[in-house]
Image (cartoon, rainbow, N blue to C red; front, side, top):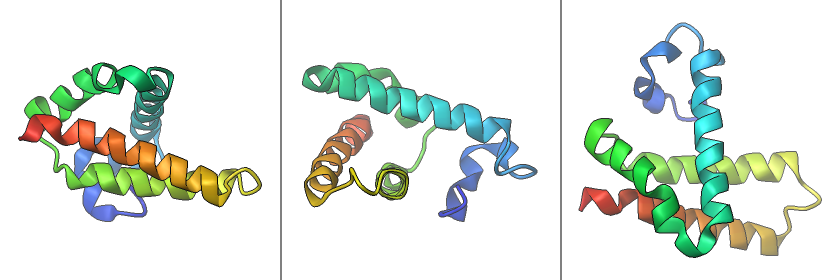
Length: 109
């Protein structure tokens, strides 16, 4: 939310505290969803189905935000794990996050 301020409208509670509890809860949910998709990589559509429906039908979020999220996750992984974030790891994570973004945008069609 700090890197892409235009996304702050996603959580109204962000206005007073961009590093507060609302962000921590959202971050936990996103990381858990990505973790579920990693664990069920062969069934990623099933793992992300509820999240996709939530964002498309209830929250009605702009699907471009999924690409922004992917980019932020890649930057975070590279910053937190520089020794492990090789070119091969970068390519694998980029491909995986592209699949995640694609699945999350399917309900918009």
